[in-house]
Length: 396
Image (cartoon, rainbow, N blue to C red; front, side, top):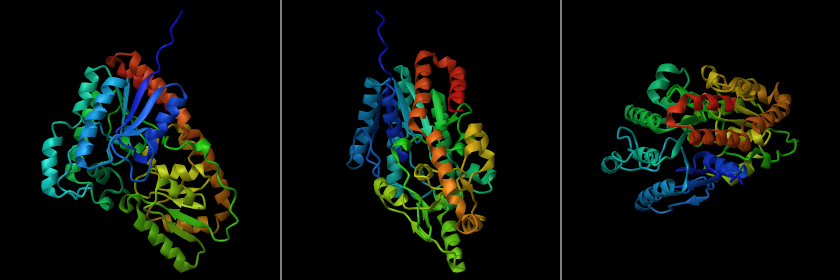
């Protein structure tokens, strides 16, 4: 009697950025994998996790890192890290304000602790036969010097935290990940310029599109335009606000809502009433927020950088429903959509919903990842070229 193989045990960790790891773990369980999303800390926007290891201060967080590593070594076959991180701490750049609001001397002290540990668990996991996958999601890989040298439109001078040291630290981490990870993905195509050559694009999978019912057609006389920045500088919010003020002064009728500081659940309720989303205008791709609005059947405006599109599947590129706008063109684009092209919003919304159903379906993406995980387990690490070819085919 043939015994069925045990299900692959997958650990998604250590962060909950954008809700992606939890939704992937959930979708993978639905197709027979033994997947779990474990986070070091709760997410400020309230994204769920199967397990959160710490909700206390810095000491509790550092203890949680070691607990997470022990879990990875004892209970899982594949460790799927996200946001360019492993279980271990990362050094903090000293040449810019810390996102963690720590003074310079504290960051220096913290770096003495973090430097020898940073990504050191990757080697230990490999020595213990674990397969390692890394997904990059944005500023974990994006580098200011590259953006300034190669991109006409970029967020490097708006964000305030792309510095020479942060660029150097990111490159060092990417090099280490490239040495140990068996597969590398990026949910933003521009990141693939700075990631290992074998890295591949993976669409956002942070939302169960099938579980969302788009609201019925609006009868609102005055359309609602929405913008929801997680970081105003990176998202190009000042250009959005300038365009809104110009159109208001022209007398174009519309309501504008700036969404900030809400939990994800609260924000989704508000999104359902919108007629149009202005997403990010500097990065060159749309964000996870845009997928949520597309799932609700809403049109999306964002800056799409042409030079990055060769990284995504041709069919995905052909079906892309996002209305392209730059900081220079956002006023004109928004004016047209609210006046002479307003009759197109319904069709754009339907196209957006269909696009989200096809390209951002967690079940479909989880199925591709299952094949990747199985390939990683079946083959030796020397078969890396065959693995990357399979990944390229999967997401096409």
